[in-house]
Image 1 (tube, rainbow, N blue to C red):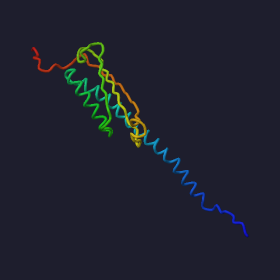
Image 2 (image 1 turned 180 degrees about the vertical axis):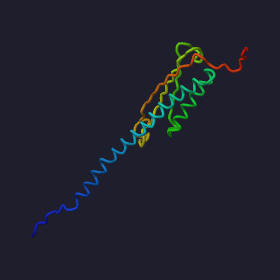
Image 3 (image 1 turned 90 degrees about the vertical axis):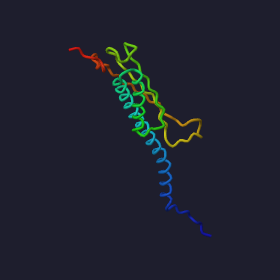
Image 4 (image 1 turned 90 degrees about the horizontal axis):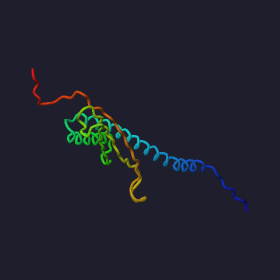
Length: 152
């Protein structure tokens, strides 16, 4: 009887493929997650800037709030984050009326960006990353008053 020796030729390629798959899948997930968070960060900072400018250009506080929310929503839609929940907070200092005197309008945007490729069945809701941004805009000392008669 002759003893058969086991030949290991050809097994290196199988081990390399399995090792590559085991390392590549988590790496791809991390890269996709970083890109998603970066896209959300771009949208959040752009939304804060756009919302503050829209609020400052509005004629009054009520229409300013509507314009700020629309500008923030548009910034997220432009980045492809249509389903993201966005919270817009507007504060003014030192006056309660933001469009009077030399107020400083500060807009804060809060948003949650969900991470990709994880279903809801893995424990409650999908994992998300909280993002926020603020932008401050001064209201000028001299403002245009529409509809007022100018005396010669």
